[in-house]
Length: 87
Image (cartoon, rainbow, N blue to C red; front, side, top):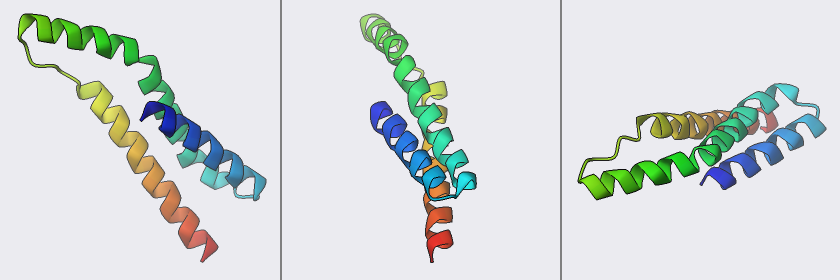
C-alpha cells in the first residue's frame, strides 16, 4: 500500500503540474509523502509485530493508521477537486 500511495501521489501531482493545475499538486503531494512515511516505517512495524507476537501483546499501530488515513483522505480530496475542476 505504501508503494502504491507514494507512486500514485507522485504521478498525480506531476500530471496536475503538467496540466497547469499546481493547486492540485498539494493534496497529491501529501499522498506521496504519507506513502513515503509508511514505506520508511516498514522495518519498525515489522520488528514491533515480531515483539508483540513473541510476548503475546496487542500491536499498537496508531501512528501508522493515522498516516494511512491522512493519505487516503488527501487522495479522496484531490480526486474530488480534480473531478470538479474538469467538469
